[in-house]
Image 1 (tube, rainbow, N blue to C red):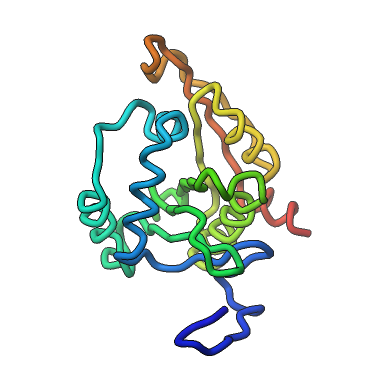
Image 2 (cartoon, rainbow, N blue to C red):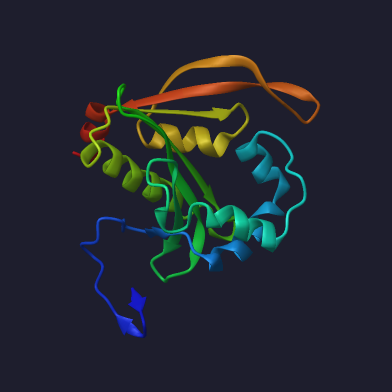
Length: 193
């Protein structure tokens, strides 16, 4: 990792995996967030519908609310970097319920960085943090039917399909089911050996 012109060894850094490093959002991320918003088919699966047109200024304003984890009680939103320092996408840890010990996550990888294992590495870091540092006991997740990349990711990470909510989302002129997934801490711990 390079910071201020100096090379820093980040091998033992908690927020770094085998392929990615997570960092706080910054104003410089607005341009990539805007570029990603132009990938309508991908954004539609993530946002469950077509977004209204955006701008770099709007994305900058949106990111500002989460920059540097200003509201640590709300969603924690990260920028994802590959190990060369290129921003590859965004991730969040959200829907955290202390009483029940449950949480969820979101991950979006920019088109040019997909199929490189970045999403899997990112989610493993988030799961490790939530289970081992925040004492959560279960991750609840979902995706819209037809999002095969998300289904593969959940399966690869050891999530179990727990059900589906039929005809939950309307887009592309039809209704889609919401696929429900869950992963307990014990299942996560077993998957990492």
